[in-house]
Amino acid sequence: MSLKFISAEQAASIVKNGDNIGFSGFTPAGAPKVVAGAIAAKAVAEHEAGREFKIGIFTGASTGDTLDGVLARANAIKFRTPYQSNKDLRDRINDGSAPYIDLHLSHLPQEIRYGFWGSVDIAVIEAADITEDGEIVLTTGVGIAPTIARLAGKIIVELNAKHPKFIRGLHDLYEPADPPCRREIPVYKPSDRIGTPILKVDPAKIVGIVENNMDDQVKAFTEPDETTRTIGNRVAHFLAGEIKAGRLPASFLPIQSGVGNIANALLGALGENPDIPAFEMYTEVIQDSVIGLMREGNVKFASGCSLTVSPEVLHGIYADWDFFKDKLVLRPQEISNNPEVARRLGLITINTALEADLFGNINSTHVLGTKMMNGIGGSGDFTRNAFLSIYTCPSEAKGGKISAIVPMVSHLDHSEHSVKILVTEQGVADLRGKSPIQKAQTIIENCVHPDYKQLLWDYLKLSKGGNTPHTLSACFNMHQEFAASGDMRNTRW
Image (tube, rainbow, N blue to C red; front, side, top):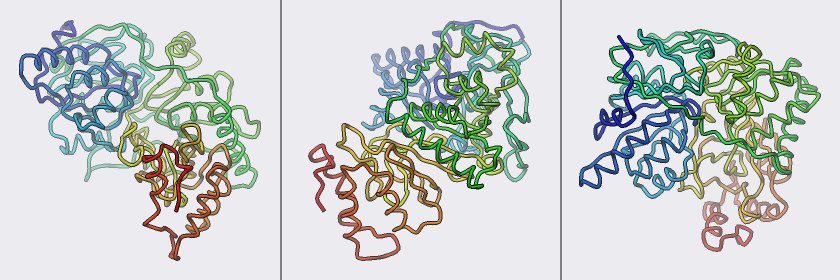
């Protein structure tokens, strides 16, 4: 087979109304950059001509604006799963015009293989290199690429010149067998490799190669502020104390960390704490801070699903490839996020909450219980199976008008049974071995902002008893007050 180069517009002409399209990548890292824009332009033209045009979209996780944003603005989305973080798409989801299905990220590839989502008509894969016999070197994100490339009827490759061919070997691509033939996933330490470095596809399915030369749309994180720095230091101090107490091994355990400014500040704090030894990571997203910690010798190895780093940091990695090539591996998300592997490795998992309630339940996804923010992502994959699960959040938001700690979460993503530690800038609540009322007392005393402490103590006094002392007539009063007056501090019981 000879490689067939086509334009983005020619690629879009292959897409039909109603097609289900799988895109590579995980976050903006490794997500296609130009084909989606041409599909969006086709959708606009079809709509102007009075014809329906929408596609179903599978991705690894969130993507860049050149995928989620353009398709949302073109009203071209039949459905979207499993995760997103784009403002325009979020608006479409919350006004009901873009049906969105929030999923645990480790579940999607197998659900596609099980036939739960119908056909994969087209896979769009970003590549650093491709050969005539169908060997593809992926770029900075893997996501669901092996599954969609194997199942799709047609494959479009975006060949991105920003990524050098010499990164062949960065990836470890492995698809487990489906039940009843599935065996154990033989990852016993973060650096184990169990698959292949390239994505091998049937070259007859490749209908065209579109060239692009665009960086991943990953923004550098802001420098830690006082709140995020304090949260990070509290987590680092807590984990150092666990080592001293013998509840963590002196050699430490692998870290999984979520995405965002708090996670970035937290990883920096772990690196700065002299009582935390150099550690490995088994996570989904490898961020800027991880690369800095590697250069300093504080992170020994990182396994993830994507290199979600700013363009400047990525170019530095490529420039120092001899240093980094044996310290990084990227896997499909059903391996990077696999509950079996998380349980076996004994991960310390650290994720971010939108809100927590007095008993340790966590809302990661919905503002006031109804409006989708981003999605559950991989937090559930890791939390339920952690050696030690930690959730962090600022104690308040909107200048104090919102308390992140409420009587009952307005949407439940992670139950109290899975959450061991809660941390805000106010302090640390260790929930292990505590009854519901003891959890509530610990959270109020250690994590709640002073403006809300008495309010929440008063809530507990309303209860007429029971194992979990809720008052159903009042448990959402803080949310209702914010909806009515814009300030939870005005709540009355």
